[in-house]
Image 1 (tube, rainbow, N blue to C red):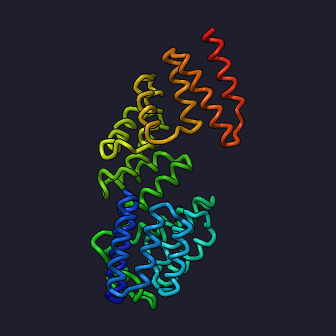
Image 2: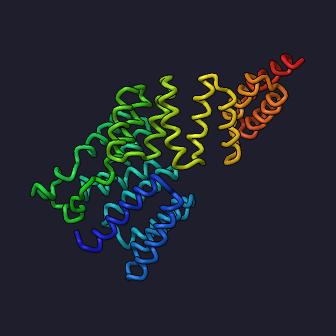
Image 3: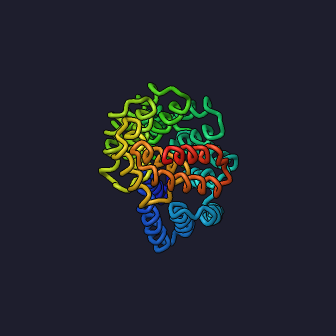
Amino acid sequence: MPEIMKHYKQLIDDLNNLGYQDQIAAGQRAREIAHDARQAGHEGYAQFFEGEASFYEGDLETACSIESEALQLLPDVPFLLSNYAVVLMVHGMPEKALQYYDLALEMCPEDTHALCCKGVTMANLGHEEEALALFDKALTIHPDQTKLENGSLSKHDDKCPPAREINPYYWQTLMNKGVLLANLSRSGEALNYFDQALQVNPGNPRILKKKGDILMNLGRNEEALTHFDQVLEQNQENTQALRNKGITLSKMNRYQEALEYFHNLEKLVELNHFDLAVTTKLYEELKQLDKAKISAKQWISALEENDLPTEDATEYLKNIEQKKN
């Protein structure tokens, strides 16, 4: 692999890892890399990292356009192809994303990023067994097992990265396999993969939150709370952890505490119809029926705004009114 390609492979691996943890910081870092690349005269890479910045900033249309143009300048760089595929996947074009993952894997069959993200795409399309196979293949690619170290080089290995101390996508693959196993109701296996991921990347909030979700669904509420607390210690505004801690507390009949977490959530985002349904239930459990009635009306409005049926919410409101009377 040419030195310039090695340099940008290192940068994009680091950026992808940062993006898993802090998208705002990843967007800022991508713009810094784009600036430095342009200063160095590497226009194709500069354009591509500008596209990555747009991706992390939530402008998927711009990200797709810029990265597509960059790939016309750098059509044979596998790690750019796989990152572009991620943008396509998130932008709702999974079939097109699969084409780019396959191009990347033709050039570098041991591209663990492409294998992991293709697995996520296949899982989203309902091809669970194929996804598991892709995750398993990615997990076998560890630095001391790469072709570059055992001397068995393929004709494409000039485009593959040299082995690094840690497979930069190992923990993401463990986590994504855990998510898929949980979705397949294989919770015990899923927890094992989350534990392995935490051994590689201790304290990672995404892994902690997803493990907490499974524990919550299994009714292991105290353990779930511990995991959500660890996430919130790192970021008090993690909306998913706030929501799920509130739900867990409500399952434990700790209604006042649960309501406080939904109030904190409401300061950050507009509550969706599910959140409003939970808060309505909490108000009712606390016998604050006037507030429950208001919350139920908000619930109905949220359902109407999203063209969802309102029958359950309307019936719930009637019950509250009857209790009040």
